[in-house]
Structure formats: C-alpha cells, structure tokens
Picture 1 (spheres, rainbow, N blue to C red):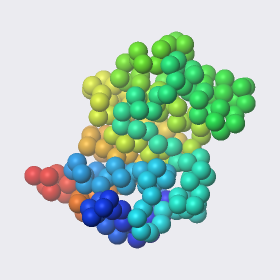
Picture 2 (picture 1 turned 30 degrees about the vertical axis):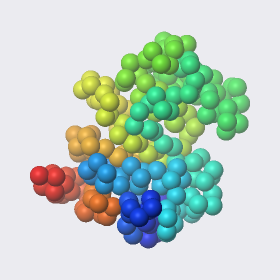
Picture 3 (picture 1 turned 90 degrees about the vertical axis):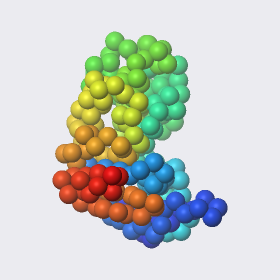
Length: 224
C-alpha cells in the first residue's frame, strides 16, 4: 500500500500539489488531469524520484524521504519516453543492467531475461541494438527492464503517449496482464476504462476520485 499524508510540493513560489492525503490500495489506479496539473510530479513521489516539500509518502511503511532505496526496490517506474530509460546499447544488456545493480546472479539474470523476452515475443531481439527498436518495442523493453527487478508496484508515466494505435493496444495488453499493482498517469482514457480507480488532479488538488464510469465523464466535462 502507498499512503500519502498531507502532501504538498512547491517549486519556489509555485505550488504544484496542495495538501493531498490518499491511500492507494487498488490493483489498477489511473491518475489523469490536464498538462501542468501536477500528475507527473505526483507519480514521481510514489517511488522517491521526487520528495514532498511537506508531508510524507509511505510505501508499505517505508518513508520515501528516509528509505528511498527500499522504496525503489518495491516501486518500479516506467518513464514516458523509453529513450530516457534505456541505458545500454543492446537489448539483453539493458535488461541485465538493473539486475546487476541489485546483485542478481548470472544465472538469475539469464533466466529472467529469457522469461521476459518470451513474454513479450521479443526473444529474437535479444542481441538487437536497443536504439533501433520500434517505438512499441522500446516501450516494452522499458517495461521489461522494470519488471525483471520484481517490484511489487509499477508506476507508469504516459506509457502510450508516443505510440501508434497498434502499439498502444500492445502495451495496454501488457499492462493488463501484469500481476503487480499498477498506477498509470495518462491522457489515454481508453486505456483506463477497466481500471479499479481513477483520480483526477486539477491545479494540484484532487478534483474527483472513484470508478472510471463515474470519474471519466466528470473529467471530460471539466476539460470542456
């Protein structure tokens, strides 16, 4: 569970998030809102990539301010642009990078690499240059690079924004099949219609919070 207690985030005189308190427990949670509403900052709070100006973020009891390493073992983060996340030149090397940093054995790394590539029908791309992958393949590689480190929770920031329709659907199927709790920041309303919970952030505050059927129409009206 992720617990946010009286969270505010400010940059200079600008308040980005204003006194939020939430318990995040559902298996699939979406965070939506206009550009500049604070939702990406919200996402980065959840694994300690950003720290609140005031208040506390707790992940299974670990405080992101004091136990950032433990939090990041539990919460994986998938960036909007996979090129910002892919760090090694070859697919299998990129998958191994995070596992090596966590001290996985060579046997574990090989087995997890085999499993994740097979899961996403990318086994034939094992030795492929990572920067020459298609947009959809890069996004799946970025997701795979997080999943091989076995997080309990996966946070995704706009996972389908840069993709065409075919690859959006491919990534949506991949997300839907994950066993982990997933928190998705997105503008793609079709992606989240079957989620358990949708949170709308507007001007740094919670505008609506509930099921997709109730919240998405309220968000569309707000944006109109």
